[in-house]
Amino acid sequence: MSENTKIEWADHTFNPWEGCQKVGPGCDHCYAEARNARFAGGKSVNWGPGAQRRRTSAANWKKPIAWNAAATDFMVAHGRRQRVFCASLADVFDNAVDPQWRVDLLELIAKTPHLDWLLLTKRIGNAHAMLDAALEVMSHGLTEWAEVPWPNVWIGVTVVNQEETDRDIPKLLAVPAARRFLSMEPLLGPVDFYQSSATWSAAGYMPWRNRPILGGIDWVIVGGESGAGARPMHPDWVRDLLDQCEAAGTPFLFKQWGEWAPGECATNTLDMRTVQVADWFVDDWKFDAIPGSSEFHIDDEPTLYRAGKRAAGRLLDGVEHNGFPEAS
Image (cartoon, rainbow, N blue to C red; front, top):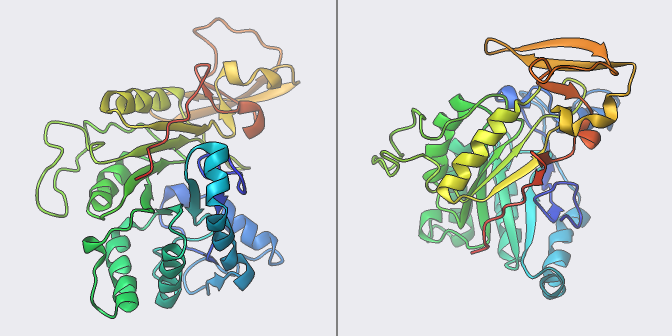
């Protein structure tokens, strides 16, 4: 599924710069921050308030030009356009970034019309104004983003719980884009698009009255957390999101269980001497350690086992879900 990235839903990953700041619970165990520290002698030099963001090399900025040049070969081989995830080690709409860098990024996107650019952010409230500001520089004040939303730019927002969903989906829907998508990773709680408290759009009307706010969203990606401090994701949260997406006709991609998985996905860990387990009880996780050879009545089996990302895989009830929206 991926050419130059380990991200399951993209073909390439492009980072125009590196560095960010934590803005919510989904950031608690940020892999990009840990990576930044690993390559900087143990300190995350590009992370946090006041930290300088690091622009990547000129050679890195040339890579999308090469991918764009290979568009015909890719189309012949795969029957579709290439998807570029931007950015895995930063946030395009970070306030701490030099605005000229965003201008440079949009100019690069303009030079690569055969690539679909997936701009994923945790700062969706900044997106429209920052796109307008960059385009104003590029067009010498003649064009606004809303007038010409580019056909190869997809805008996405990361939401990890009901609170972020209610807050950020209306902001996402207010940003003109070829496609809009949600990355619900790490999913930290149940989300009900029908029961959302998000009622008023930025334009002052309710396009989703009596229907889910999923209307207007072209794609939903769901995944659990991985890494040393990973938090569990309840299987029922994922199943419920799948049901809601299917009812709305919205493509659904299940990216990964992450560190924790239900029993059918954790069989490789059950012959271990001791295995960590997690149970959902009174709206919270309870953790324990049990002998790996333990046998349970089906009613007593733990909700999740700590299997590790690779062993846990990405099957939901035995099915791999790889939904994608059509390119515009």
